[in-house]
Every structure is written in structure tokens, then in C-alpha cells.
Length: 88
Image (cartoon, rainbow, N blue to C red; front, side, top):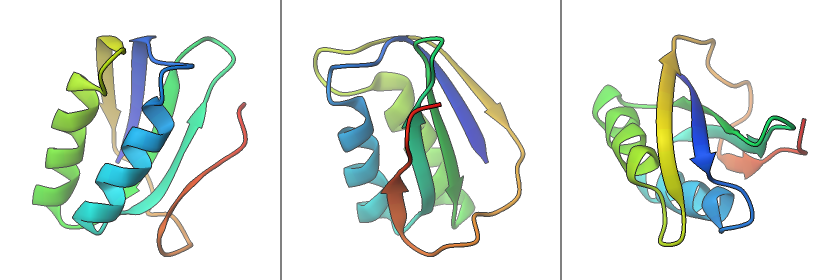
């Protein structure tokens, strides 16, 4: 599943928050900042875990303000584990 999160989500620890939550949930994938100010996530795992991550992303860490969260079906990542990707 691919998420696009918009709002005040950069320079507030959002990517670290996603990495921490995804790792605890056993999700594979990645997170990165985008040049339009959004954050993009690719997540693969048990449906319940991915749904929980989406709910956590919709709330965000303290200091962030999420205005929208778009969900799109996507191919599972090739690598295991969850990591930060370079900004795009």
C-alpha cells in the first residue's frame, strides 16, 4: 500500500515516527519526503498492521498536522525491513 500524507509533515520527525511505528508493526517498506512538502510511504505486511500504520500516519507525531492521507494499492517492496529513502 502506498500512502501520501499532506500537511505540516516535514521537519517535525514524521519519517522517524513512521519508521518506528512500521518496525514495531513488522511492516516492510520505506518512507521519504517529497519536494511538494508531502511524505510518501510504501508499506507491506499483514492487512491489520498496514491499516494500523495508516491510522497512525493520519494522526502523526506531536508537532505535525496531517491535512490528508491518500491510500493507493502498490507492489510490495523488494527489501525486507523498513527504511528511510532519499527525498524526491
